[in-house]
Image 1 (cartoon, one colour):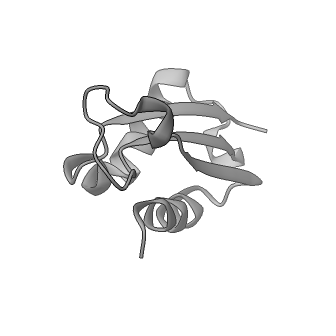
Image 2 (cartoon, one colour):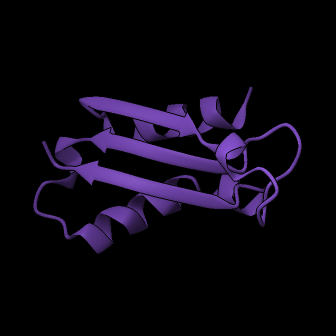
Length: 86
């Protein structure tokens, strides 16, 4: 299973999002720090979930980072997060 698929499944299970996109942007960072052949180093998460209602932006980002912590430790170099409550 790819890193993208793994993160998607974890985010779906944790936050039951109304919409979710996990985008591998690695190719845009070719030659930059953290990039490696084969990609799966730089991701953007766009997520809308009622689970975020009443939470601060910092709390939402912390929850998402915690959800995909294993992937971050295993080689994901950068993660951009765009999150909304609804």
